[in-house]
Structure formats: structure tokens, C-alpha cells
Length: 242
Image (cartoon, rainbow, N blue to C red):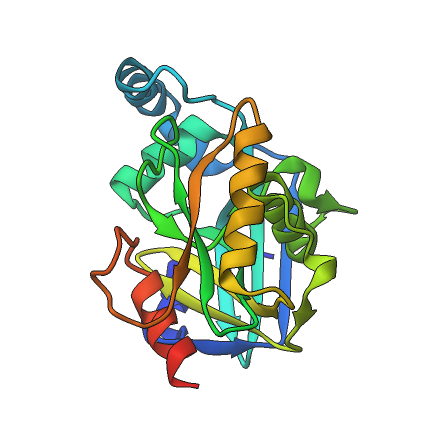
């Protein structure tokens, strides 16, 4: 299965929230064509990255080769690539690759969205968004990505919170911007925002290598309240208008 770049204009409008009924990401054992074509430039870029931030780790992650979005279904073909290849693609946004990742929208009992601020040693230092991360090889089950399992693992690692404590809304939603597709689901926690933030603070304090600095309670859609990536303000507007 392969989808051409010409399919992309048929996607929902960029920056808009749309419902998702199915997420099917098939992972090929073959190298990603973008990685093969850009390996040398990615290595050179990585040397500059680690010179600026020696804490970065060139692990492995899932990067999509093709994505089709139609009638509420997201169907993709993906490959495992070095993180350095992804960072190079993120800089260039060249055709031939896409990035799909998932995250939960964690709502406290008093109506706040629980977000996190990334630590200074990460590639997204200072950015504020919901806990989550890129799909990794351990998220691949029988050749396909387990997005729900990925977000549960990432939230637990970053915050100490188990999604099994929360009530999940039945439907996924998504937004795409500049070749990146963010899929998300709303989860409602029984605890107040202050209680959740205190729990996350204790988790961060006990973690010898925390990815995040702290948790934050977001109570409105103001797009400049924090250092958000571009896809977060449209989600906030949608979330707080419901």
C-alpha cells in the first residue's frame, strides 16, 4: 500500500479538528526512503544538534512514508528511523515523510487541561503541550502501531499518571499541520488540577532523568499563554468551546 503526495489535498483543512474512527499505521521492515536519501545530511545535522545539546539521544522511532485521511480513517505506511533522521525531516519538512503521533487531553475534575513543560535537555525544550511522544518500535504490535498503548506508556513515563485511572471519551480526533498529524483523545480524571500537578511534581522529583520540568493547569484557549507548538492553540479552542 502506498499513497502519493497528490492524496494530501484531500485531507481535512489544515489546522482544523476532525473526528477519527480508525488509525491504521502499518510498519514496514524496509528502510525509509527518506532516510536512505537523506542519511548523510541527517548525520551532519545531528552533529550540530548534539554539539548544542549533548543530552540528546539518537534512538529509534516510527516515521510515516505515506498517509491517507478519508472518511474519518487515518491509514499510513511507516518505517523505523533514527531520531536524527526525524529531526532532519522536521527542519526541512521535505516531501516523502510524515509524522503521526498521539497524545491524551487530560482534563481534571475542575475542568483544567493538564499539560507539561518539556525539560531543557530535550529537543522540545520549554515547549508546553499534553504529555506524549513519537511512536517507537516497542509500540509496534504485529506490524502495526498501537497508538493507545503509546500514549498510555508516554503519560506514565512523563507524569506517573496511569490512564487506567481516567475515563476516556469514546472518539479520537486529529489535526494536521505542515506534514504532522496529531491524534488525540480526551480523558477525564477524578482528581482536581492541584492534586494532579502535585502528583506529577512528586514523580518528577523522584525521577533521576525526568523529561519534563513540571505540569501546568491550562484553563482557557489563550494561544500565547505559554510556549505552545502550533497545533496546540486550535486544540485548546476546540476543547474549551465544547
